[in-house]
Image (tube, rainbow, N blue to C red; front, side, top):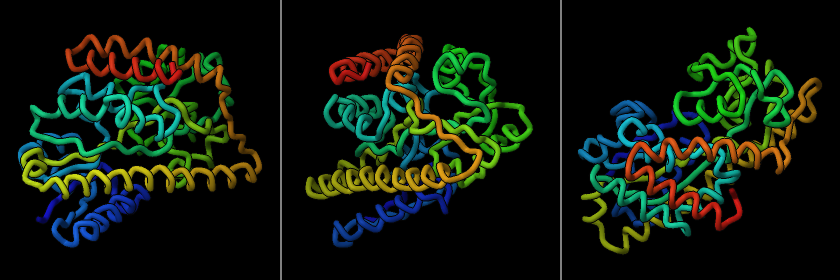
Length: 313
């Protein structure tokens, strides 16, 4: 069986390289019964059209940020990127693997003709900043890039002044003082974009945004597989999740070490108390999203129950 999967990542990125390794691993684990062609973002359809494409069989599967489909149902925002919920990929995976998230997400995806194989995530995103920010109080009035939706709502509620800018304009906007900080991506990726040449006060480790990186497949294709191959694919996705978190985390650590040795750069690490305060503000923004649909309310109830049980709220 030959499968085509499309990623939401560009070719050449560390994440896409790991996804290509996953595709090769599926071929090995299945002894050639299943081959996966891994395509970069935009190869067949736009990044926010892959859900429909997988359901229609135009693509066989995707590896993507689930929150891209928020326009279809607010549940995708809450399951894809509940801002302030997680500090590590392990915390995110625990909700899906132990907190009922996988079963719930498959119920949500069923009408779309898509089956969720399993969760993955990169480490939490860092915040490149041109000014020192060590607490919620320091966010007051700070002009910062934040994408529309929940991320923007949370930062506005925390006192910042969010600005809607594409990722491609973050460097120039920081450099020219249009913004003072940005919701961008992981520390290592920010560094590869040169952001720390102009943003000398990065906040790291991250705590605000840790999106779900879902691996899903066409539901009919999934049903046509033997139990053995379904189990094999589930195990391969667990390998991908662990490798993604470990390797990107390692790159973050290497960049952090480099930045600590760079004159003029100061890494700002928030205290647990400051993180809790931010999470409380973020959690208050989840409720309005929960009210937008029945599925969103179900995600909110399951997520808050799990996080509460784990002492993460």
